[in-house]
Image 1 (cartoon, rainbow, N blue to C red):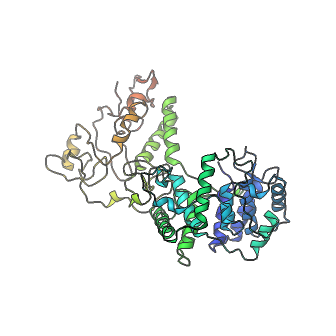
Image 2: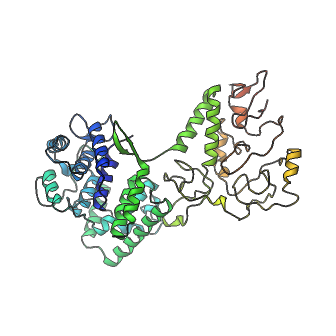
Length: 495
């Protein structure tokens, strides 16, 4: 769901790193704020939600940084709503306090601690960040670095003005326990006690320990940016990574380059202007769409869509392992699928990688023990796309293929595929084969092997899906006078 949170953070980061928006970009940004403002004058987390203090504070800061004056309609209404709330701006949640502290508008001592020393704990510790959800971990490592450095951007003469507009005082506010309606679940005593202990440590942290912790966080952030081509796991952590690069490598251009890469997450139109998506989900959406079509019977007009979706999913399989994935505790990606699209950096990543997949240039032989060739020329493994050593008894010549329509009797079990991981999951579903998808499916890097016209498709997809010539009834394909077909390869299915 779109909201103004990421857009506001993008405008703030662009101003901090010295890459302000162009006039046309500013106009598109303001257009989105005008289109999404609530009746109260603020902004919400989604269209059906009430006005949020967090989104409204960030939106007000972003509008002021684009040059809008406080007496203009959007800023005036937002400021009036914030002042009318019990407790005012200090009740913004912790993330809001964190962003205010980054801009020098709030005291870091009023923010719940995010110590970078957490990454120095042994990895078996229950509270080590490597045990967090991947997005939580990626956000925390950037926040911990900025918090540990006590980074504070210089807004010049605009800083005191904003502080007075938001808090009505020139002093740095500090209200760590203040909470407003955005906090739906108040912190429990255990969390409050842990924050109190960490706050005592933050008053005088060990210098040598803090230095080591900051170096560890910096390495993790740089690794995340490197393996995702500066896009980050999502814009939520990528924008914080841009600030980390700005602090670590001032003047190097790395921060500006990473900021410009965030355009991948943006969407602009004439009606609602520019907004930023928290993730893209091509593979996720395509998989569920195919499941739904097959479960509903895949009418004739949807058969071509299913074929195209199958080709997309075959091409979206990850063929490159995340380099040095232990640095950020990333899961193995080789042979799996990502949330968004092909050539992404990991199973949970959403940032596409722009370099060529390794199977285009790899010369390593396929490690599978079965040396029977499964492609038409015996040069590529149909499971892992790695080069396969062809022998006289395992790989037929192209003439043999053309003359005899040769095909191996069994498919290889390649250790580089993900089928062994999901075999149990697949076995419980009728509309996705427990064995690899029909091997005649084409991909951008392969050609289908010749098949006898009367040989049935070995994929269970032909047994459980309705196609152009047969309709599914009771979990099996009901044959018509013309027989049934696999919706992927168009070969006859099992009768």
